[in-house]
Each structure stands twice: as C-alpha cells, then as structure tokens.
Image (cartoon, rainbow, N blue to C red):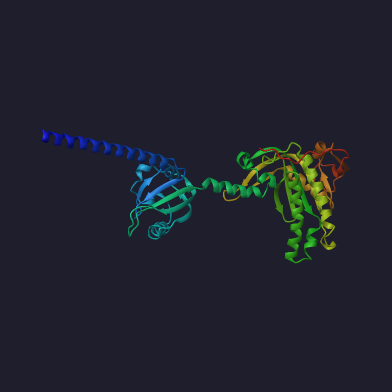
Length: 377
C-alpha cells in the first residue's frame, strides 16, 4: 500500500507538473501568436538578421516593399534582398553590432519587381545575450517612393500655381494632368524698350530691376487666380482656366490681372529712380488651346499650345507703355465689366480676321467684378 501510495503521489505530481507546463506552453504559444500578429501588422517593413547578415525574420510589409516572397528569403544574405552597396550595408550592420547604436541610410535604388524606389533604412541592435560579435540587427524599412514623387510634383506646381492653390493638396491629387483641349484666356506681357534699357546697366543691377517687374507681373497673375506659363527674358505668360485652375469667368479675371499689373507698375514708379522706370505692354486673348505636360522623358513642362497663345503675344506687341489690349473674342466676354476703346491693329501678322482690338480703360462704374477664387478640379 505504501509503494502504491508513493507511485500514485508521483503520478499526481507529474500530472500537476504536466498541466502547469501545458498551461505555460499555451501562454507562450498565445504570446508568440500575438507577437507574430503584431509583427505582421506593422506598417513599416521589418527584417531581422543574425550577426553575419543572414535574414532570420521578415514581415509582410517588408516583402511587399521589396516585391519578394517572405518564405523564399529566410536565411538569405540581406544584401540580396536590398540592392545597396555592400560596403554601406556591411558597415551599418557592423557598427550596430559593435557600437550598439542605431544607423540610418536613405537609399535610392531599383528593385527587380518594382523599378526605381526611395527607401529609408534604420538599423537597430537586437536585444539578447551580450557577445563579441553581437546578436543581430533589426532593419526597419519605409517606402518613401510615393512621398518623394508627390514632393517632386509639388515642387513643379509651386512654379506655376498661386500660393492659395499650392497649399491645397487636392489640386495635385485630382488635377487631370493629361493633355486636354479647353477654352482659356492667355495674358502676355513684355517690358517696353527693355533691350535699349539693358545696354546701359551692369548685369547685377539689370537683374535686380528686371526681377522687380517680373515679381509685379507674377503677383498680379496670381492675384486673379492665374498660373505662370513661362518667363521669357523680360516677358511673362499667364494662363487662366486651365485644368488646374478652372475659372468660369477667366476672361474677366485675365483683364482684371492686366489692369492690376499696370497699376502696380505705376505705384512702383512713385519711389523708383526715373531712369529705372519701365512699362509693360499687355495683351489678352480668349480662345481654345491644347494644355498639358510637354517635353522629353527627362524634362516636362506644363504649358499651353495653339493660336490662342500666339494671338495674345500679337496683342502684346501692339500694346504701348502701360496699355492693356484685348481681342474681340475677349471683349465679347468682358464687355459688361470694362470700358474700352476700339483700335485698328498696328501689326497684324497678315491675319485677315484681325481688324480690331480694344484698349481697356478701366472698370465700369458700379460693376462688381467676379472673385478670383479658383475651383478645385
């Protein structure tokens, strides 16, 4: 009976210990599954490597960023997963292992399954038993490709858009940047007598003065919601009602911009030395143009192409100092807002249908001009 009791006691103790181990194992398994779920749920890519650079774990985000299958790359050297200069990679891993400090690398590279990418890599030491060779490294990857693309696109738009539109991120996301044909108003302005004026000034002073006038013209275009198409020496071209600044009253806003430009030049002259006083000749035409990105694969510009652009330039060439001239097509859309006087063109480039133009005198008394608000595409 005593021997039986001893055996029973051992059996009971073993059963109790087994149950405790089973519960502990269950808790460990649950914790492991939880950590695995957390690891897979991390938005950033995470790769862990051993002390010599072999991949030990790889989460789904890292696999997606790199365009690889996780299970096929465990045990591979991390340099085969991330196309980075081996010296840079080995140095980062070695410094993390030896110095126990984080390292950061920004990488512009190309992945076989994705093409060009911009990656941010942060190397951190794995916690574990201390050793001379280190216990391994955790690498956190963040894909900055889309952010960099967006930043590059934004830097392009800053050259063209009024400040109010630059701050509206939806413009960049929703604008139709393909080539389209649509009615627009084009404002062309050029400094009268600039060639002879520039011959008597040193380059630095000349650039200082020209930038004053270019700033006036740019601000006036932006004030009315237009965008800058291009600068050509002392000339500026502004576009109204493109796909990135749609404006129902674009003709009125373009004329309003021209009058503001002429007025701001007069204000500038109130404190400027007389020998530095210059005037714009301004021409505005309304018509259909082809608008979009043009250029090569390495350099593109957003611009307008067509006779509408050429017509605004021809009107500008007819304009005297401080004059705002508009075409008959523009006049038809702004007649209710501005007083004008008809004129016969001094220069018509053999255009048989260009027999009249109009000099804008000013806003009609009691008229309320449209606002310069720009609708989102």
